[in-house]
Image 1 (tube, rainbow, N blue to C red):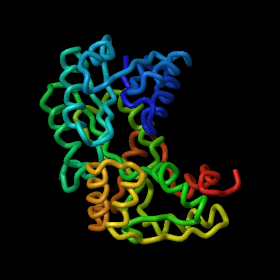
Image 2 (cartoon, rainbow, N blue to C red):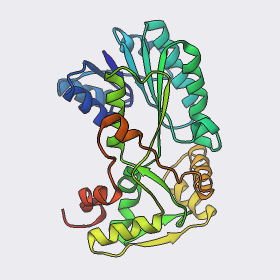
Image 3 (cartoon, one colour):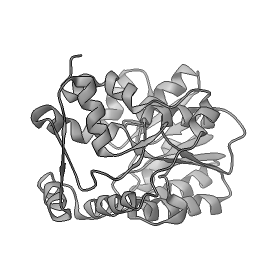
Length: 287
């Protein structure tokens, strides 16, 4: 049995589908009780898990051999994920696949400094582990930038010209499904990237070419970026991490490419051009 935490998210949701298609017994864990109820109604083995409430972990881990470990939010994430690791060890789990972030090993920005302590906790647990360290998600364009692209034909960013890599979360899910269902990936850390790096200006050109409407890139100051995030209810600790990450991208260290997705899944990673064509309607193009 495989426990997928974060089963309602951009990686967890397609991972549950991939595992089901492969015929792997899977339990989907959600933070939201409503999502878990809907998943059960759809025929899934689903549970509600709250990392801050250890009493929810043991039932979720009952009979589980492998765990896909995912958490978001930054605040409390280290202790929350570490509590899952400790509960997994107590439950006899044999393999943990942790969704981390690229650059985690060097701990040069806030998100990396959040993920790496959990990786060390897993390494010390005695449980076989695999770390997936993906680049920036292409889904950030549809989740966060699409509204202003549709309404204003504009993208807002603090780093319009920084070049860094982007990966489709569905490719990450395919890697996770393979690693969880096949042997040979223990004690491996995989950096997962798309086929090339590009800047937001390049992304805007691609979106404009696909939709037929030019997209402007508006450069923000750090103060303006922080004000915008605050107006949208982004917690200060998360805003600090996002600014820190942008500064890291500016250093050029996010401009990397690996062959891990192709090597593990035997499929080429999704290109940004293909991604934009698939989700053209999200950006204001014709469905």
